[in-house]
Image (cartoon, rainbow, N blue to C red; front, side, top):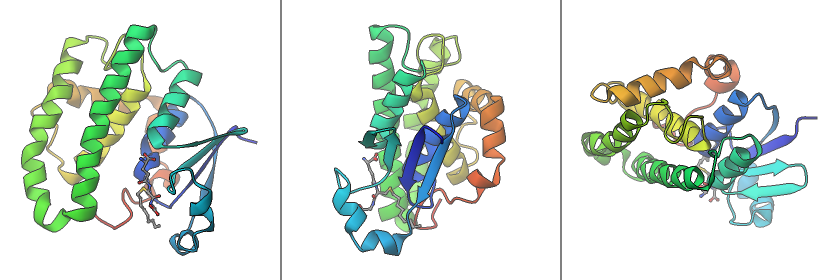
Length: 208
Ligand code: 0HH
């Protein structure tokens, strides 16, 4: 029995980064896929702490909030820095990634047809901040000298943005080599090439 279970819709969505993280950390998990009409009945929603998915189970621990899941996995698998100072910086970087993810999701779900072009124009201003952090930390990771949950989170956001705008990393050499380095990690490379990954749309409304 795999130790972890994800209950979520048939999308990459809010589970993209945690799946990539688990695969890279050599972990197995079970997927409970929830059909949207089943969700609309409301029974499962009523059991979710914030009325939303994903739900993540680690034995008898039940978690909601995708970033709480990433932090939990970070603590369990040594991907939360080497000391408190690094952990604080990793939290900061992950919050920065979350800011971009929220802007992206707003554009995808609320403003795709009229807002996509402006979103792409503004994107460089956001990506440049991460490029600068990576350029100054010579390890290739966001913080310290080993991978953290914030790296998986950033990588997943970059994957989605490369679909939105394939050239978006061209002006950012540190980000570009970070994305290539992450994509070349053997477990991640195999996962990104798998049907399990490719069969899922990025978002729930067909926009990407
Ligand atoms: N802060 C939370 C987190 O990070 C946000 C969770 C959230 O927004 O975990 N959950 C949404 C689903 S993510 C939710 O539960 C967006 C994907 C939508 C795909 C749905 C359609 C798929 C059909 C195959 N939304 C449902 C709700 O709020 O009732």
